[in-house]
Image (cartoon, rainbow, N blue to C red):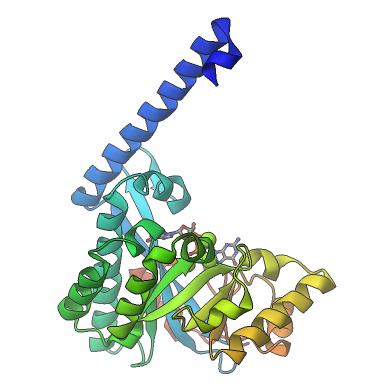
Length: 279
Ligand code: C2E
Ligand code: MG
Ligand code: MG
Ligand code: MG
């Protein structure tokens, strides 16, 4: 491609590419060092029951307190981590951290005994041979009942990697639960709900924010399909009270979004749980 561009432009593209690649490598090195140095933190966003208004669980979302850069959101460093095994180190750290945190909240009575924690795993880690051992170790170390650990995989990741299916079955056999994240953005046919080892479906935010009648109808279809296969339905990105009304009417089970709380540091969770949520 550089050749086709010809002449002086070849230099332009090569330089741009080189700068881009060395920038990514530098970011990857900084992230690896940051993970070791304890610069990563998890924030927790409540998952709320549409029936009771109670907090049924939390999603753990990673952030990077990068020295000199402030708080870096995951979209800016997960793609770089995914270029190498670093994303597996990250996944192990996130799982251990989240499971340990929930175990402590259970021990000190901060949360009810059926409250879960969900973590996001990258496709690369889900396909990794160490995945099952990684999950087993996190369960053993934290002592967390397996069903309270939820692993989220994005729809596109699950579809792109049929090779990871045995892994998904194996971790589910450990008793952890699996949730299909960002649902509706990929092309999962409803028929696949039968074969994928899933417990929950998270409808992508883009369907929740849209108010067009077609989108509402689509969400209704997703809820119906998910329930047909015994899956719990979570709607993400709920920001307005009207969306709660709509989702309740469509039979959605759980909701998550800024309306209830932004993701917060672990220290703010006890105060969050003392609030009364009206749904
Ligand atoms: P996700 O798993 O779909 O997480 C939901 C994202 O939506 C989070 O962004 C959350 O802060 C945001 N969100 C929640 N409620 C609302 C709302 O009402 N309105 C709006 N506009 N946004 C809302 P965040 O924390 O920036 O994470 C972005 C993505 O990064 C996540 O999407 C997930 O795919 C990935 N990610 C986060 N943590 C991890 C991790 O530990 N490991 C991996 N591999 N990926 C992660
Ligand atoms: Mg998620
Ligand atoms: Mg999502
Ligand atoms: Mg997402």
